[in-house]
Length: 151
Image (cartoon, rainbow, N blue to C red; front, side, top):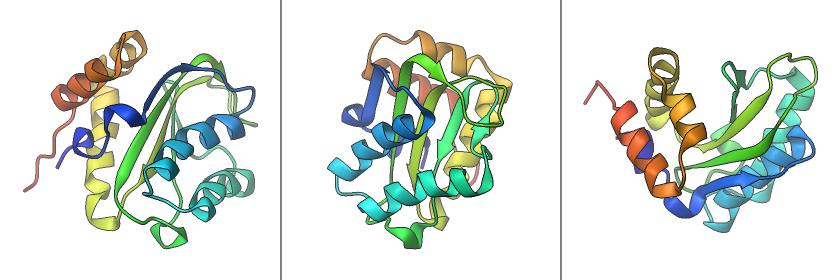
């Protein structure tokens, strides 16, 4: 599977506003909640983990991968993507964050995130995601830019 297999157009939120990183994670996570992929406990845990451990989810250049332990409330695998109108800053992190990916993946699908991580460092994927005009374009970019190399 690839990232685009877990991300549907209705879970791509473009050019939204968030005053804080907590609000940004909540907005991204709500898309998973609305689709009944996570519980409210999982969404709250995504925020709590950053409060407890710091901005470990922030990956330059400008992406945060919000997640928690699947046992905290993943009902089914899925991903959402939030692109912010203006970046937010996580406390203790100098990098502005414009993209929040909320991940609700079981362990067997974690390699999908690894492929995404490789792609953002090896290609212009982040710039392309920031410039995309609509959700279908983002899905196409992710299909093109990420693919699982293992079967």
